Image (cartoon, rainbow, N blue to C red; front, side, top):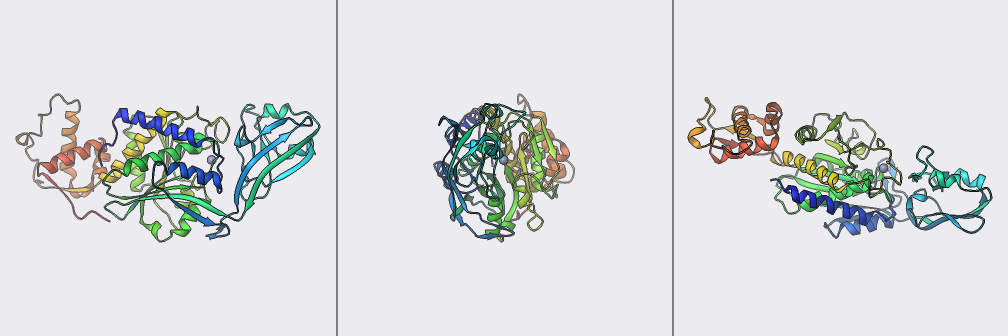
Length: 439
Ligand code: ZN
């Protein structure tokens, strides 16, 4: 796989991803229901997603697919009949998965169902109640403070009924049956960095890779968090073992530095590929060990699967103040940040796609590069010295044992320059791939 985009094309891709986020932002999503389906419907305008429906009550390992939740309207009216909280202004106002309710109650009683953030008085928090039947509203602490004593009328026009859990899947076949998994949760309502940034980045990757001859097969998942990955793994237990490398994509649109959370293996090829890509991306980054908390890597890395799946984000979940509040909005995610994240993801995939073992066909002393026009003939190129160094490293370590990623790590040169050097040496009959490449 080559560099797929120029820097101008990256900038355009960032804007396109931001536009997709803007399209999806108003939809009230949840872990089940029509909001999730509408989201997948919009994605299908860009990529040929397969839509799966898993019926309510289906056992998936230790879990059960819940009843489907849908909501049409919700509000709180004061004694004068004025709407003081209105779902139509922000879908975050309703606790996600609230059961239907209609009634009148005094403020003291209503307060038990109200959620606000005292330290961020202008922001609406995001709250869910998936696995416990209850209802509630979320509002800015400043709005809450303005509610006078008296009687309020509450109304949540929602339904919690037998239906199904919906997810979207796209499979792109490559030369190998071994798969690269790219997974994102798509279950949050009007929240951008967590999780529409991940949705738009995975969609952009799927769109780009569709036009490319691939070494690995690729599987893209748009699933509800936790229950979605559990349901997918339960339905695809045998096929899951084909996953060679995977990334859980989330929080890739803020302007913070990159964070990579390693797979449970800790030093799998995906871990090495991401760390290498980050080291050479010219941006700030941090690498963290695996922990059994976070997004769907928790399920992919559970001991019964133990897949080599890490998670590459910008600022991790819970570590930006806007996280799970109305401030995680369209202004918080930037086209440039999305484009930068796309570039790092593509750099990782280039490593996976192009990594291979080679054998030096002239292993006894250095071959004479000069007479082949490969040495000190590249004057004018800014990185001519680097390409020469890369060729010397590739020739020296290509004993059939070391992969190009091994060589890139040991030489501290970028994978792309090591790969370019290998290709140049193959063209000059100094290097040959060790065959066959694994499935
Ligand atoms: Zn979240």
